[in-house]
Image (cartoon, rainbow, N blue to C red; front, top):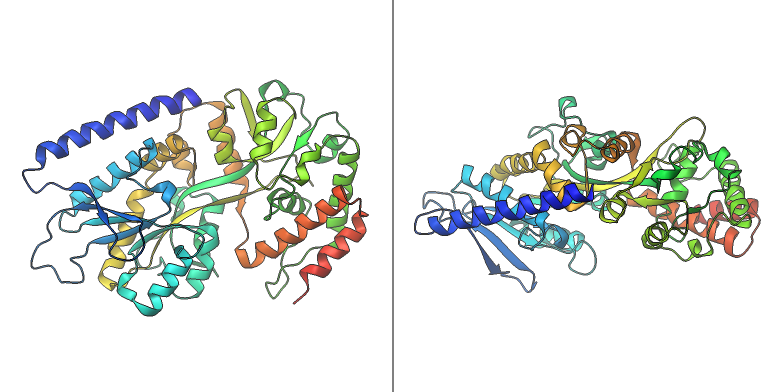
Length: 435
């Protein structure tokens, strides 16, 4: 896997320099070119533009071109191989529409002035400042769709069965049964373990409880992704008929009893209750300090796990599932005539051949199965494909945030404070129901 990614990175660099040479040769004509610009606002983030001189007959509001907002890690002006692939892909699209410049601005997701704040403020005070296309994480899709800032996908494009989207990918883009975007890249929670344990590691959660093997996960994760996955695998419900978050006491109590048991048995390292991310899990796996661990797919792909295997986790109730996160292309265009072309660009950026190259070089997972087919045909690619097919999207923030806090506090209370599992479950449900 790592060798393939290195070869693909070299290929990406080579392709970039070939394209750059072409642009330099063509600069005397009207060929598109990339040049850094400064943002016209107080935001110091650079704006990058694939430019050409628009036709003077183009309407004034269209002359601005297509505006894209991207999180900084996707900035096509960076020196990362995946960024170069995105740069080249945007250039190809621009060449199809040479009178429509493409402006790209990196935009932080969180914090003051982040995407949510900026899009909300612009929609209220300066709609023409809205971008035409924006790459959004799952957690921002629902609040922006419900506020009316995102345009529904219907009428412009569709997520058809022929496109082989994973179920979780459709969920990422859907709010209240309405699709609001086109999935781009994904991330799935997986169980990683060494190749030499592939035939030894138990397949089911109950068998693992009585085995000698150790496990690591980020128990202090504010989203409690592993705890939520295990709870869902055990058949627990997370919402009531009104869509409010719930936890079932019997299911949660049994899960917490299992956690207390494996901790007492030394099957969970002491650091799990301090780990808020999977960084310690990845480090402990790499150093051979644990036999298996829950990682996000991005961490797995970017780590040195060439001789490792992955699964969706131990089977529970004869079912296996996991959670997935990801990014979608959505349109916030203030210009009605540009909504369609915005989704056309989003579709172009989510074609399987480009998605396959971008994800494998960048260390992400494709959101459609036909892109995975274009990955290197090795065992881990097949396993990641299977895991992706079993995944469901992380709950939207309004549901997932309170559930995550309740589950995290419950497992930490049981492991650290030795609180009886049943009492910890009761406390979690009581706190979840507080106004």
